[in-house]
Length: 235
Picture 1 (tube, rainbow, N blue to C red):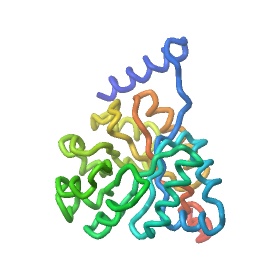
Picture 2 (picture 1 turned 135 degrees about the horizontal axis):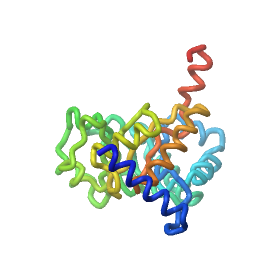
Picture 3 (picture 1 turned 60 degrees about the vertical axis):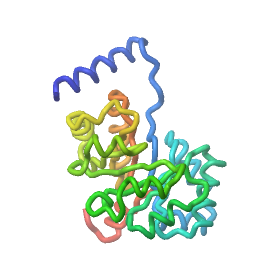
């Protein structure tokens, strides 16, 4: 499997170099935005700027942390994402209890609802019940690698597998070995700690996954982890 994965990458790269394929700009297909940053951007009149910066990364979908955001604020952010960056918005529910899922299902301006990996540890309602609750909204599912199942993934409109804190090649290798590459309904989710090295890692993962025809979701926009570690004097 390892050799086959790298053989496929080599063939695609060689084809690009010889002009047989048109290579798109490397991009992140979706970014998570947590509710605390979202509120900060609104309060400091930075929201539109941040959305434009996100769009420069090639982002098509905003995954908005919507557990506790008031409905009107969530709706406003989704509207600005569409107006400023022509991005679709998905309500990311980090704590998928029944109340939060009900709240998300009622949100206006969102194409779907994403359930975090916590859902699969102890589902508060079945996926069938959740589908009925969502109505016309799409169901997006986010898994840890140990939770992932193609059978479950087939019931979701879009999936991602969280391959966090791995190396550049290790991320792609793991995705390949799991059999999730080349499927438009399954993305790889990678972790960005907010540092310069973190950005370099994300850029490398983008390029690698592009050769595997696999989407990249990034957690999360303007992560403060690196800054907090710096303030606390931790490496």
